Every structure is written in structure tokens, then in C-alpha cells.
Length: 368
Image (cartoon, rainbow, N blue to C red):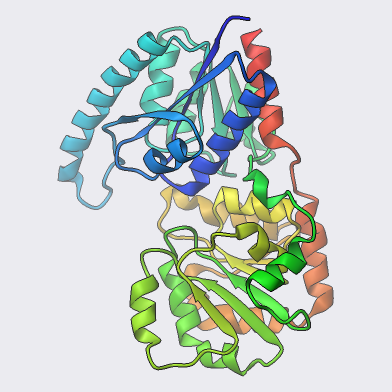
């Protein structure tokens, strides 16, 4: 069979990169010999490291986001966008893809625009309940738009929309006895409740401050144990502040490497409301308190969280209230088995199964 060449573009955060890699893996699985995949990301962003580690080739575009706070910086950004458009066009002419897939992030804009201009069918994967500006602009030329939430015809042409959900990291869903293995791995007491606190790979300042401010209460709760991921940006600073302090019930980690174990042991999760995190929590049936990040475009994390809260599938604490309310609410909720069970049942109803495989099927239909 002839080669099936596909470009996957986007990135910037784990929330874009992990779904992109999941889609690539699902495409490869359909025809390992014929499918050839090239990633296009943004130079100096996380994807330039994570994608090669997953076994794929990646080319970087010299692009960055617009600076909302320092408008004069945007002259340089415009120049970078122009350079990226030219480079994206060249990549497409050299690689000759039969389809281009955009998962969001800086690089997907120039790449999908160039592809559409050259007559290559494009597929958009919109992860949030509130569509981003780039994807709204790209939608008119897209052949398919794969979404994770219902009612997205507010943003996109109805006849192009497919409700597929967000692809998640496969390792989270695979393996037996994960809870028991996780308890052994983290040296946890199986008779105690476990609270998992994560703020994304880089960390979340507000969530960390909320924990720091209420460490005494967490330590005083004898029947609770805590796994606290501070994130890369904050770990050293928090370790400095904890010097000389013995923690008995709280494990402080820079990054959770065995996320499948951490989720498996958690009775309650505290998390940001990124689209990928929410998809994982739905599939894993986890009771969660969401603290939406205020530092994202169009406040889409709040909209993601509210989509769950309206269905009784999560609790939301606004970022501005977290320092006072978050740990108090978590300690209260984790002692209410019925409430935890209700949240767990309701969030699972929103889970979309095999999203990456379904997106891969749609891409193959387009190719045929």
C-alpha cells in the first residue's frame, strides 16, 4: 500500500501534547507500515522534547502567543507568525501529507491555514467546552471538527462536528491491581483516605499556596494521607519553606511520574480544570474538586468546570477563593462517602470511550 502521510500539529502544554500523541498512536495502529506521521510544534516548547520521546519526528515553528499585557511585544510576534506561515507552507510541500490534524496550541494555526490553502483536508480537535479563537478561525476551512463537549454548534458549523471526547494517555487505563500497586509504590496505608493534589506538569501557584496555608489541618487529620504534586516551577521554593518541618501524612513531589498509580489510590482529587485532566478524571471515575486557572484564554477552564458542576459531576472552587476554602472543603468532602460516590457516578456518565480510535477512524474516512 502507498504511504499515508499525516501531519499532527499543536502543543505548548501536556494538555495538547498527550492527546496529539494518542491520536498519532491510534493512526499508526491502523496501518503501522503505511502510516507516516510528522509532528509540527512550536520551537522551545514542551512538545519538542515529549514528541521525540514518544518516537515521532517533530519540526518546530518560530511562533509564540500574543502578549495581552505588553502590546509592543506583538510586533515581533507578528513577524514570527509570518515566518511560521512561510515555514509551514514549505513543510507541507516537502512532506506532502494527505491530511493535517490540529490539536490546539500555537503551531496549529499557521500549519492548518497553510494546509487548507494548499488543498489538504484539515481536522481540528477542540478539547474545551469553549472554543479557542484559533480553532474558530480555522473551522470554516476544516473538513471535520472533533469535540469533547456537546452544544459546540455555538462555535462551529454543525455538519462538521463530531462528539469524540479528548484522547487520554493510554497507560492511565491499562494494568491490573493498580490501586494495590499504587499503595505499595507510595507506601500508603490502605485503611486511610487518600487526597491527590495536582496542578499540572508545571504546577499551580494558588493550589500550592492553599496547601501551604493549611498544612497543619492536613497533618492533624489522622485518617487522611496526601500526595501533593507541586510542579516543576514551585518545587524548590516549597522545599525551602518546609525545611526543618517533619511531614507524616503529606508526600511532597515535584512531578507524579506514575500518574496511573496516583489516580488509582485517590479517593478525592484536587486539580486544575484543563480539558485533558477532565477527560482523564471522567474515564477514571474520580471525585474531584476543580480549581480553574484564571490565566488561560477566554477563561475556558471555568467553562470546562461549570459543564461538570451543572451535572453534579464535580465541585468547583474559584481560584480567588481557594486559599481560604479549598482544603477546608476537601477535608469535609473526603469524609462524606455518599457525596464522593455521587460525584464518581456522575462524572463517569460524561466519559467518552476510545476517543483517539474514533478520531483516527474519522481521519481514515477522509483519506478514503
